[in-house]
Image (cartoon, rainbow, N blue to C red; front, side, top):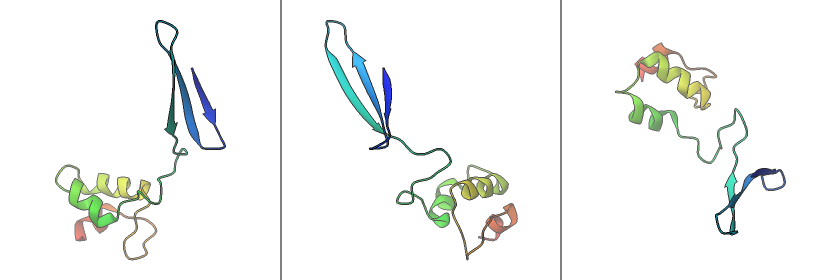
Length: 84
């Protein structure tokens, strides 16, 4: 069974075990479309980890979704990633 606790912004899972035991598990939720500000990586950190694995255009899309900014730009492009 799963319930949502809006007061603590957690998902509360109730596991029913064979034999009649119950366990409550609480998992923190991240709101849809949001990236926690305290966990948001800098653009440079993200580029160092992902540069050899993805094309520049895909990196730009991912950085934009994570709301990473470079030099106060509101949006990154593949060309901007290439110049970094």
